[in-house]
Length: 80
Image (tube, rainbow, N blue to C red):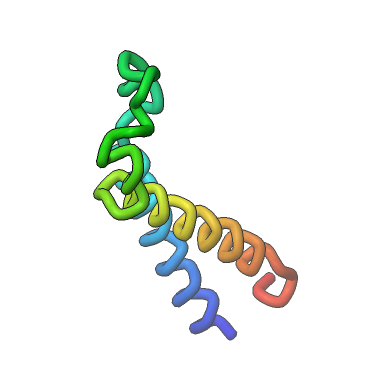
């Protein structure tokens, strides 16, 4: 059981580093406020999910869920 805890802690640490890095790579939500009128009509507005920014958002969501699940699992009394 100690080996499993060690492996989960390593995965948790790598997840923390990756999550921090990906959040810092993202642009702020206020970056495109100058083009509010018609901004969704552009090519990038329609295909945001396929762009690099969309990939970063999806990765952030996945890593955040992984972070929460690992934190909950590591907090169980089984490892204590």
